[in-house]
Image 1 (cartoon, rainbow, N blue to C red):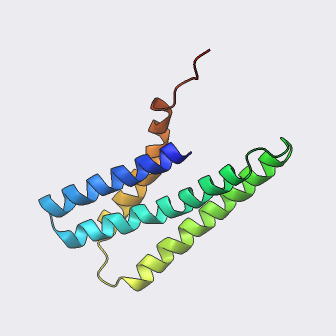
Image 2 (image 1 turned 135 degrees about the vertical axis):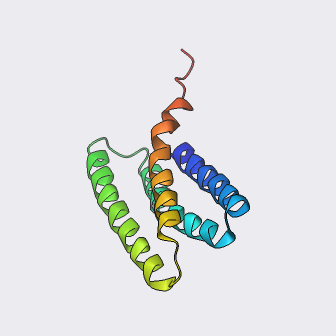
Length: 117
């Protein structure tokens, strides 16, 4: 899970830098804010899953599903806070950052390898 969060941070940072260099830094700020709205809840969820490691197997589904609901709620709350706090928000850039950060965990499976047998 931490690999996915690290990839999210790297992707949003690279996209933000490219957006700032190619377009403007205001759009880059909006892109990074959109990415942060997904990265922060994912990071907290990863910490919660790591804290649950070593407990009984019966507790995993409860922790996972409650964590997912909390992650979705926190993401929506952060997006609402960003929209309310930044009057001149570039919506397209913010949505691109959010979507990019949400799609990166799908590619995290490429970096996860099976342990040696």
